Image (cartoon, rainbow, N blue to C red; front, side):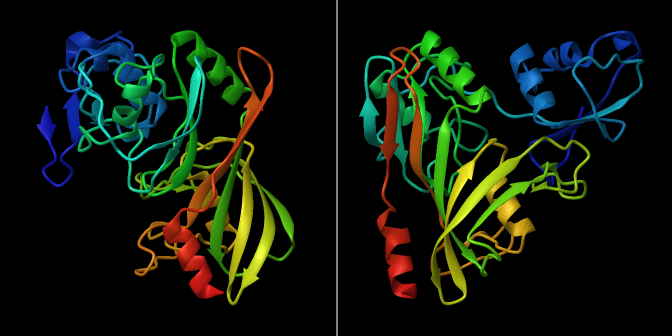
Length: 304
């Protein structure tokens, strides 16, 4: 196996002749850089494995001799320790938490983020269930997106919350400041996204692995050449809001990846302001809201 020095976590390996007939996921799990079947499946699910240059499914059968390229992510430590990362607990009961994540906090441990993640912050609050190394995590926010996430406190709670997400019954609403003015006060963006064909670190509409993605928006306020939008996710793809809004000419302010960097703000103006869902155990309606944090509120006030 050779390691690409310019991309520390990128590896290539040639499948040996004795791998002929093996499923790709089983072969990957045998590699020390991958280490487990669950990690292999995660890499395949995320499109991080190429076989002879093409994204491959886990059921692919090897013939031997294929060049396999992958991003081998370090497995999270089996022993996680609680850490204070400045989380506000917006709601909690015996089954779940709703936490208010600050900008700059990564949701779960990964290569390069071994401590100080949201997972470390919720351990002290009884987070449990789900994948190893990601206790309680049901959905995610980008590192530089602030706001609300729901976290499970048991395996049963995790499974029930995941079903809510899969059935699109977890209402997720964001506030986004964009550069430009929408053509209408409300809109629906229905455009599949996936890893960009030329830049795999980005999400894009120009992809070989499109996944359905639907975003709704409503204009709240116009401020000079900017617009404050209320954005509601119907699906929850990686970077979905940022990609969709940029695709219609309304990039999120402060987003250096998809088109509207701002050195004053220093991060994207995107905040998960509302979560609403039927409680997975009681059935009662749960609605939690979070106001704009000081950095975003102050930036908006300066524009006004």
